[in-house]
Image 1: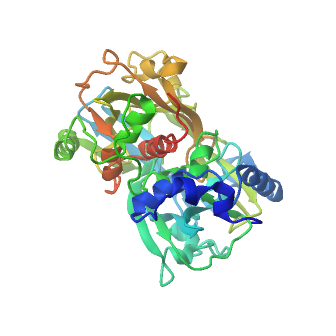
Image 2: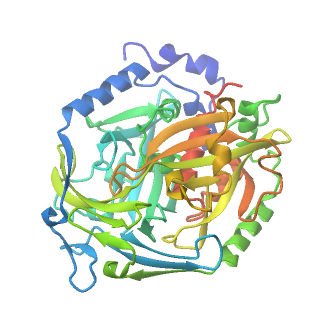
Length: 485
C-alpha cells in the first residue's frame, strides 16, 4: 500500500481509541472496518480475475459415465471404487411426533471428518481473514468465497493423489497457530448421515505466503459480502457462525439495530435464563423417539432410478444426479461424481421480536433424519415451500415469512449450500420482524425465543445448532453496522 492502513482508514484515530484486549474486542474492531488490505473495488476486481483465470465446467452425465463410481450389485448403493470419499445409500426414518412420522430417502454417507478453517492475522492492528476463491461443482456460479481450508480427510491425506491442500499446516501439526474456535459441527441432516466437520479459526503472527487464489479481508468486508447473492459459500458461513462472541453492550434507545446490538451482549436480558434454555433444549431432545436406519438404496420405496437421476415418483424433495467436472485450480483438475439436486429453492428464516429492547430469534428444535442426535436448533422456518404445494400441512410460520411486507424484512439474501455435494442447492435466507399476534411470547411446542448471545454460546457445543441457523447467525452479525432503522 502506498499509505499505511491507519492513514487510509482513519481506524486508529476514530475506531480504536485504545488497544483492544480481548478476542471479542479485536473481532468487533475488525467487523467495524470495511476497507482493509484490499478496498472493496480491489476485492471485486481480484475475484473477477480469479473467475476468468480458472478453467471451470460442469456437465451432467449419465450414471454409466461416472469414473470410479458404481452401483453395488447387492444393495444398489452408489459407491467409489476406493472405498473412500462418500456413498449414496438409503435411509428409513421413523418418529413419534410431527406430521411426517415415517419416510424413506437416499442419503449421503461420508463418515470422515473434514476441516473447515479460516486463518486470521493482524495487519496494522486489525484482524484480517484469509479467504479463498474456490470452485465447487454444485455452486450456481461455480466460484465462491470459501474458508482458507475446506477439505475432507481424503483431500488433505491425498487419497485422490492430487496436490497438497494449501495452508493445511496451520490447522494441523506443529505449525498450528492460536486457536480462536474449534468445534465439531453437523452438516445438512436432511442429506447427510451423521456428517460432521471440524470448524476452526486459527490466528498466526508470522509471515504467511499469499497464493493467488487467496486474499485477506476484514470481518467488516466479509459482512458486506454476506449481503450479496451466492458469493460467500456455506463452509465460510458456518465457520463465521462459530466466531467467539463480539459486539456492543447496551447502546441505549430503540429500534432494530440497537436491539440487535443488545442481543449480542451476554449481559442483556433474555426471556429464558441460560440454564432454563438448556433445560428446554434437553427436554426437546429427550421427548422424541427418532430412529434412522441405513438401508440398501434399492430398498427405498417410491424412488426411481433411470439413466440420469434417482428421484421421487412425485417429483418432490430432491434428485441424485451425476456430473463431470473440470476445475483448473483444484487439487485434482478433472473428475466425475454424484450430487444431490433439490427440486426447488428453499427458505431459511428467523422470525424475530424485541423483548424489553433485546432482540430474540425464534429457534425450532428440528428433527432431521441424518442428525447424530434427535434434534438441533434450526431457523424458525426451514423448508422448500414448493414441496408443500397441494398438501394439507404447511410448516408453522412459513406463510408469515413469505407474506412479510418489505419493511419487516431485515435481511434477504440467496446463499448456496454445500457445492461439493449438492447441485444448485440454494436457500433464501431471511430475518423477519413479527409482532405479538404473529409470534407470541409463549411459542408453540418445539420453538423457543433465544438471544444472539445465547445462540453464540450454544454453538460452542457440537451438534446443538444446525448449519442453516449458523448461517443466519453469521448474517445477523453481518447486519451490525449495515442495518438502518
